Length: 168
Image: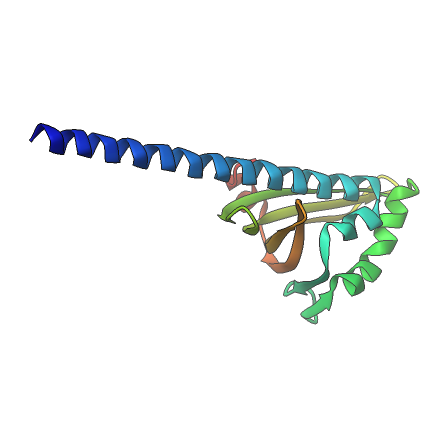
């Protein structure tokens, strides 16, 4: 009976050690992804369109179900539409900002599927010209130590209340 208890304690200890390793990997992945999102926010705030595009895989797709008409584009095509806003921001003609909050973050050491809301604002000449909350999903892969977006899905408009309900 004593050997069975010892074996049970040993197995439980092994399980806990393994579980702590899983939590450490998860924590490391989330920290890396947090840096990815912080960098993405910074590129918008500074108007660095090239750096923003570099956060996406060259073959990435952006699916926009909010726009009318709904569309799916390559990141290169999406950047063509977004570039004027980046240029205005970089030139100091506009102030742009984007922040991200998440409701689900699933993945492993090389893949991530993140669901949340982004809040985008833009101001020109002291007037707010954009202040939107968008439900989004992002599929990312880690390639050569760098996280890259493969697919961004802008699913629907979100509310400020939904945004506030998500942790920072």
